[in-house]
Length: 228
Image (cartoon, rainbow, N blue to C red; front, side, top):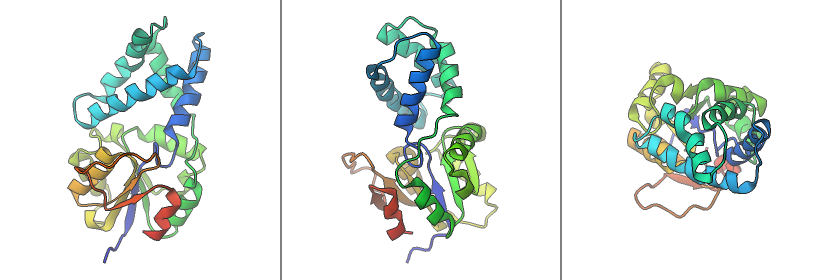
């Protein structure tokens, strides 16, 4: 019988709609930099960004390297004449101010926090995610934020989870925790390997991967109520 004592909750594309946050932020940054925006730029960013974060999760790229090269390379590949490094800095600052909650995020966080301590587990920084969650009205349901950029290790690295459990002071074991997230690699594969209970938030209908099997799969956040 599963007995859960705490929940680890991912942020981007779990509690906050990263796609809409990024789209809104890119549009604003393009305007400030005197550049023309259209959705093809956003679509290109999205496909490139997914690959870059997969490289980070596989330890093929660091977050610092991503921040130094991401928009510079996008501008080069799309033949956009602008300062990609300066745009990246503006993009990161702007992302802290964009917070579009996923459908049902408020209701499920209020429900979970009434039953368990809820810890945010994210590959971004504490400042970025705390600011965005507060702006979205969700921070009131969070007990603590564990940001990988402040820790020095990213999900799914077991050292990231080591650090999280050190902060919990031995009060909670991995077998007592369920992690909920959209990333099969960072959240599900990482959680499985560490001995956590895992729940994959597959809100985009992604094809199954036989190599990464979550304990539970949900398509809407409200479905967590039937599990926890």
